[in-house]
Image (cartoon, rainbow, N blue to C red; front, top):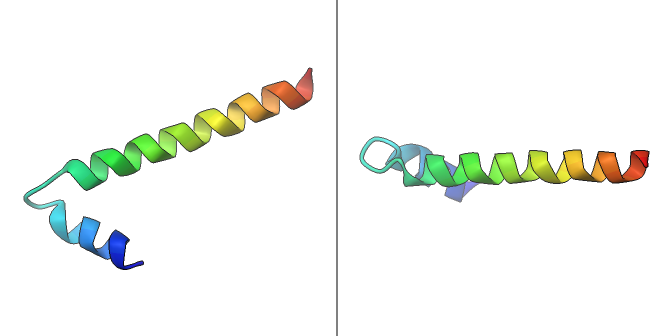
Amino acid sequence: MELAQSALANTGDNPLPFIVGGIVVVALIVLVVAFVLMRRR
């Protein structure tokens, strides 16, 4: 939780943590979609 709080505190001068978080979320969504498609076949 400390990492998330520091990332929120740093968004003012440094948008990098927010960008990294977005990339992680997109990667998780892609993995879930790929997993569902594999199970469907």
